[in-house]
Length: 156
Image 1 (cartoon, rainbow, N blue to C red):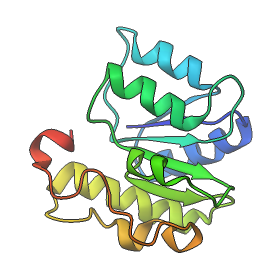
Image 2 (image 1 turned 180 degrees about the horizontal axis):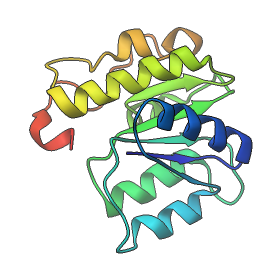
Image 3 (image 1 turned 90 degrees about the horizontal axis):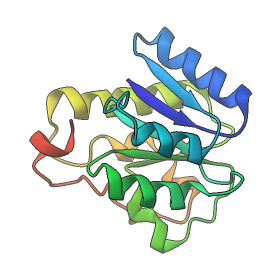
Image 4 (image 1 turned 180 degrees about the vertical axis):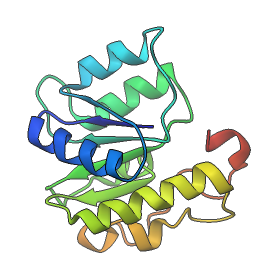
């Protein structure tokens, strides 16, 4: 299962459809506050990863990641953004970065890397080098925050 947070319904719908066509469940949320309410609810189920937009009303994606991480540690986050200036203080908050607009093939590569991490406990960078769009962002030396950790606890 994947969780998607984006204030544009069309983006949520497209990503949900791609994920479900790939054989996985997806739950979409239209705002960070809706997602935080879900994280605090009894209905919450831990996803393989959380895909989030950055620029949203009331709270941006980085603020949401900070808030959610205080409630549920160990979640993997993917930043989806059309802005290519990621502040260095925010690069360690996500496992991968996906530039908007994205090619569906790139999204599928990213999903496959996240699924591999979740299922097969990889030993290194979780395929981030080939799956993310780091060349589009000024984060060439970035590494997944889950890199070189005991994946038995971080990849669940």
